[in-house]
Image (cartoon, rainbow, N blue to C red; front, top):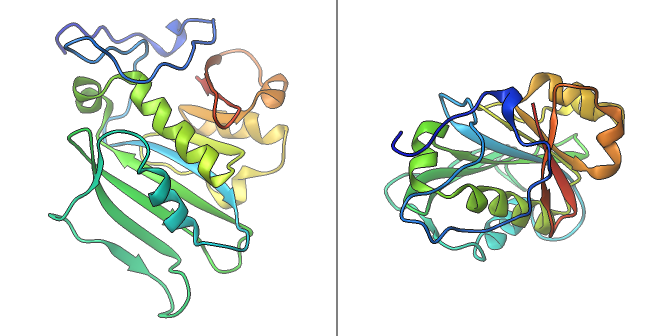
Length: 210
């Protein structure tokens, strides 16, 4: 792991860290350890509204952060009824040299859709990307999509049935995921064993880690 020193989940700094994008250091620097072994996922819950398809809005928003390009070496996937927007769609990307997937799950009868950025597991991601870049991309996506809820995990997404309503949803989701992304007003519904870790300035949301 080189100079990276992973910390336990209980060792996060209790002060909310400022959002810093990128790093001038020769090696990426992280202040936390995300215990993801299969993949690192950031999943956002988004209310479905009239207008451009959520997947198109999500992909367009990723034109802002540095280093996001399409990956011609892998194929897109889509599942649906053959007309209208697909219920599941994945687009392969390369982000700062890392393989990634932008996945949108939008079942026909749900009021919400889920947009998930699937990235390499922490031990690979932390060698290539500065921590601030990861949270910056999450913030960009949440702002562009008007998301009010998200999770950070090892492959798991928000989940439609278990999302629930605020403020109780924050506690339920944090019990099932490594971290949650919620409005700061929902912080009061949480109990001990978690850390308000980083403010996401564009979206106005707060990242809380277990």
